[in-house]
Amino acid sequence: MTPQRRIDPAGIGSSIEQLHEQFGKDDVAPLVAVLEAMERNPQDSSLMGLLCEAFDGLGIMPGAVLTCAPYLAVILSDSCFDDPDLSA
Image 1 (cartoon, rainbow, N blue to C red):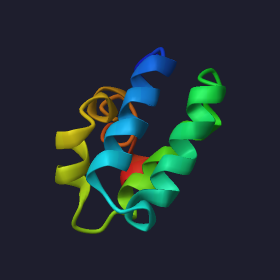
Image 2: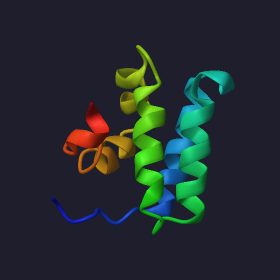
Image 3: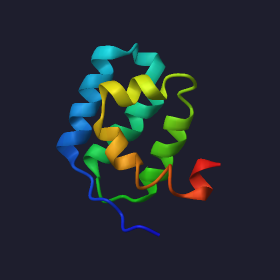
Image 4: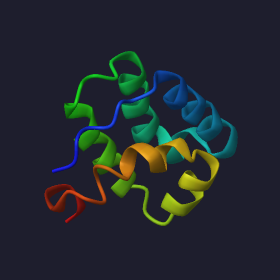
């Protein structure tokens, strides 16, 4: 298992702003809710699983989300895509 990546609250905040600018509120609401919780408490490792679930629930939008908020790729790269329990 890879060491947990340090979450940068400023990077999370920037991602939230970018998502609000590019998408309708309802389209990314679950993802933004988890990101806001991560911004407030970046050390809470339980939020990473919730982030993966919210990202997985984007349907056809993950590529667009990662394009407009690239910091998400940084934090997701060590969790959702590498952990078989979260990527199933």
